Length: 229
Image (cartoon, rainbow, N blue to C red; front, side, top):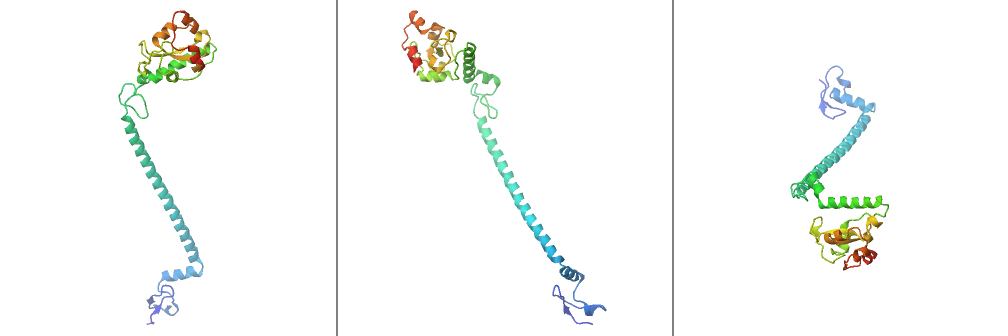
């Protein structure tokens, strides 16, 4: 029986067996294969491949973490949008006070059509279109700009014209009056418009300022001077 000897690869003690035991340097075929690979340079190649695999796994793990973070961000964003949408749904319709849909001011097309700002926009567009058909200058502005400029006072009689009565048929409802009527060649500009109560606007109709004064009316403010400002 041959004496025990250490393996040349793993260093473990083993007893050689068989008629080839005197030349045996390895405890097993596995250690023999490892030694053969090391002799032929295959171990270095294997380590290089292993390093490549580890680097690829590291990059894949980093990319997976980035994707997870992106998913978390999107989930948080969707939750914030849902919370914001729920908050906006609590706001009532600006016309009827009913519940709203997502990102809307009115609950229906009827409420949108009946909204004061919608009516003002359409009325201003009709007036500007009328001026363009008559080949006169037409500016894009809101009647509320003129009303605020004139202090919500009728430029013809000096009476207050409450904003709450805009669009009503009350005698003191504020209306936009053209100092020189469009039918007489007057432009649709802020300089040629003034705040007038409904009663004075109906009485003045399409007359010029001088004609209106000849009818016996005594404006509190001079319309032509107001246009100059």
